[in-house]
Image (tube, rainbow, N blue to C red; front, side, top):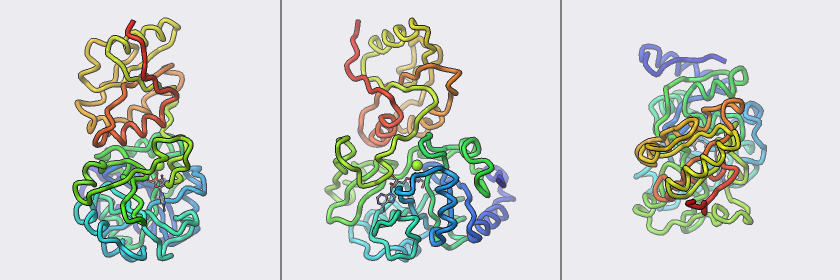
Length: 343
Ligand code: TXA
Ligand code: MG
């Protein structure tokens, strides 16, 4: 795996990106930063290239990939019809952390769409990603650049830990910004439907287009999600994680009880909630849920199984980006405790 360090050395920027673009055009895989998480890219029109993504990640074949493009003009070349509300959403949020699911016109390989008639398309808002996409001038299929099931990568080192030796290249552009993945929206219906909450919140979408629905499978385990990826367990840390909703006193009692069983317990919470708490490790995730989003995946990768026995993490309000943070935490958690006793 070639690794280009281009986060502070701007002199190598152009050369590194043109080498990476050449690898992509030659049917190889290259990981690159986006504003959400690192993606593992390959030529979306080349089935053999796309196969290499599934092989490197150990990803189930029935889970479609997002096609990344560098401009609206390029996006339009991959899909059939663009509804008026998608034009409005694109004008406001693209480039940005939003993916539109539209009817494919067949330009991208069936491997990308997992045989469906729709394709997810997105324009990432990151200078390296945009420069790379514009340089190779082909649609790039890119899932998050992690081993399937693990937390998504928000630094180049996360990618390196998971995929070193299994991919052709890695553009190290430093830590990503948003920290959780793009919002995936089904745009094949009259009213848009959120299939995966992400960097753009439901509230933000509604400000632009009025009514927005949410795939009912996101809140009902009995239903089959429309985004195939949402049915898989994901973001699993090496150490069991309990998501906990309760007062500071109740959470402290729970921590004490588990430590009393000889377990080493880490506590994850917003900065303000960390003060005055006692545990084997206290991990402040930021002042607000937006900062929590940026640090979450790094925190989920913090311990190997031998280093900690349990992570207890506070639950957040499902508002704004808190919706995406809670969606990821509910998948990462082995338990969600909502009624813990105060004494
Ligand atoms: O922020 C992101 O979206 C990152 C960066 C790298 O761009 N990418 C990402 O890709 O999260 P991935 O493959 O990890 O997640 C894509 C999600 C999956 O849940 C997948 O099932 C869904 O989008 N998806 C993709 N194409 C779809 C389609 N045609 N119909 C329904 N769901 C689709
Ligand atoms: Mg992923």
